[in-house]
Amino acid sequence: MLTDTLRKCHHHRRHLRDLQAEIDRGPRVLLGQRDALEEARAAHKAHHEAITQLKVKQRTDEATLKETETRLRKLEGQLQGISVPKEVAAKESEIAQAKTKQGELEDSILTTINAIEQKTGEIPAVEKAWADAQAAFAEFEKDAAERLERLKADQESTKASLAAAEAELPDDARAKYATQVKAHGPDALAGVKNKVCQGCRRGLTDQKWTEIRSGALMACPNCGKILYPVVD
Image (cartoon, rainbow, N blue to C red; front, side, top):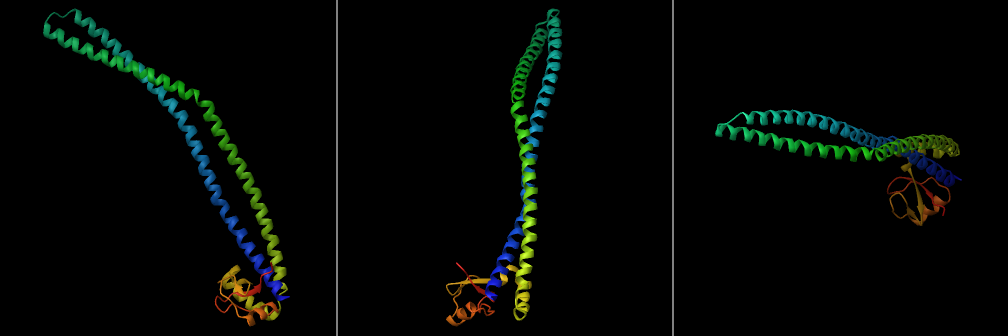
């Protein structure tokens, strides 16, 4: 019966549209997962680079501290040979400044050592997070590939079912159906439930409802969609 054929055609075309939407969505979802992986990669890299930078800072501060201590001993030695009060005061000021810098460097080195120890202690957790991120992406990529194959297989099967259903259309209905589908795709058809077009939600007359149920090829007078009765 024509109404059954239209119902099948509409179902298959909507299903094909949904399948294509899922197939098209796949690359976007994969890109989001890849961005998450890159964020995990960047966090992993940043952690190790931070440790390297802290070690460089420690070595630089230690070298500067050594230079400061050498200069401090030199200043203290020079102070022993000075007797002029003004010169003594100037040298003592230099010594005080050197000692202040010495203390600041020692504090900085200690802080850096503590930071290195903390970040080094965090390495196992950082490595696990990076490994988990890689494993999760690999699993997602595998699942996505398998899902794509299933969608494509479903797509081919549905195309075959659609072709078989469309082959059942009577010659006098096929031309109008083809024109509507070419212009509107799956939206070329709409079901009718309780005398209401499900495409535009407009009611139909009793006469049109009777004609549709009897198998006549009818278009909605409001939205123009080819109609068929909905089967609950």
